[in-house]
Length: 336
Image (cartoon, rainbow, N blue to C red):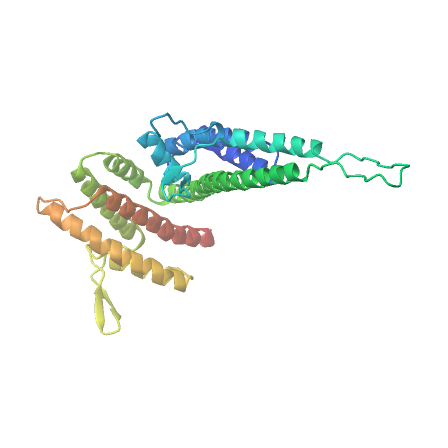
């Protein structure tokens, strides 16, 4: 669910919460609830669901020739397709408004169908007295109608409730995710501005490239990501001719071994060893991918990168830079 306008998103979220409360507390007739749900669907750009909720309230259109194909498809989504007694597939087009009005009318009729108190007596001991007929059969028929309509109404209530709840949870999760992301972005951007301010222009270049429709720009964006990582490594762990030994391997720390240098920096300066293993694993994976793209770019060709992969790779690099610079920030704070 993608809604760029924050005001519309907040309106949809508030209206969804209000609608759910209306169903749970029985504050409004379900026909009115369905219309509110239709507005929610319109706000979140779900046009099929918008029409379904509208038809749920007032009834699905049909003619003497039957039901139009597009309406039938909406009926399938709404769970209104079934088989009748003859085994024929049919669609129920009744309106919630009609069902609710019929339940109210039948309840009034039921109250009026009570048996009146009648007192029968006779002074003639030989006279045979009969009890006046009751309205038992009428009451039974009314109760059956009320029960059937209540079942239909409950089915439609569950359908509307489940769909509105899904929209509500999607919006709620989206808002939470955006809130977390904005806090994280603000923190990472502040690290970049303080520690490697010269790299802020590269971030702008990456954003522009990822928003372009040209696949070559996506590859260029990842090449710029590689340069940013290398700049961080040069700043925090400058290249050296020395090597370090890990197990039986000699690890080079030269100019182009910036991934090795970043890993060494983390291992030597961070106190979160478990997190370090995850971060280092991500750096190695991203570094390998970026090196491949960089090598192909240097050869005059472009790596086969789709936009989604490029965006995902950038997010990994951006968050990795944030994690690394956070270590540097902690070191600087301890030294002050």
